[in-house]
Image: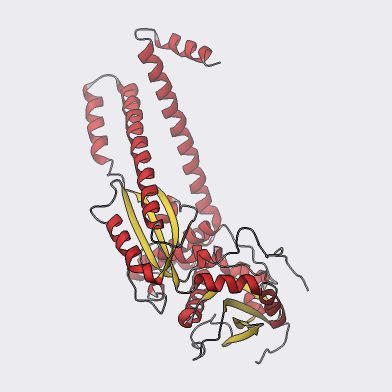
Length: 132
Length: 280
């Protein structure tokens, strides 16, 4: 990864290459710089997605090299978008469920503090009516 | 220059410069699939270009290659190396990776039709570099201890799920307060660094998936810093990132960069025509 550590050549390096510097690089060369209409337009995936993929790829290569294996070359999970998207979707679904659960708990609690001693089922019904 | 035939190669442009580097450009720079780097005069400006094969840089081929990690990385580094090489002797306006033309004429036209704006930009970027600064919320402590404690409490008290959920929401409130303070700290970091910068801009914060951290990125900023103020900027950065810096956040930086993030047209006079797809 020595190329990664290259620095703007006229200037002495002042910060060691952070783990984020590859993401920094892609963020810049793909997304920044002045656009003077080229003749050819390349449709890229979302830059963040590309960067994540690249990051996964590099982590895999480093890890695998140490172990002397090259499974990533043929692993469809590293070359196809589908695998990671499925994970991301599942993650989003779980987060949504957690948020809903936590929100319900908060509302429930607030209600309970105001009306101590009531039966829980009643509370719930009244709360629903009040918020309409 | 030897372009084999107009249809088998494209012109890949890297950067606009005021003058050609006196010693020429290093042979190592450029995309490995392409020919040697060339200096293309464009009015009173210069373009750093390279002939690249259509087979690797045509619309379909390049689109496909850039979606493959290894090729994307190689391409990004080659582009960056070339821009840096061009920046060695003076200001450059970096172009985005894969700025491609069918001919030298097309590339030259693109520059000469915007020469005034590009000249102004070169003047603005002269003697200045870009610094990338990211502020993250401090990593949340491992949750193992808390969970063990909860499990114990649950065993002791009989309140079960409800008490667990109420503790969970209490924890969430604490976390939200902490988040508010961290956001304020990130804003303070930005305000302090802006004092030493000519200009500042913000990029979209990177996701936790990308940073690999368990804490959110609160600030993803770039600062354009005058060479004369570089030490002051670095000192401020060291202060903010050190023990005396704001609590609850972690400050990280990389630089100096060729000022990619500040190579843009002025807000008002955007001379950029539609970036259209020209098909043969």
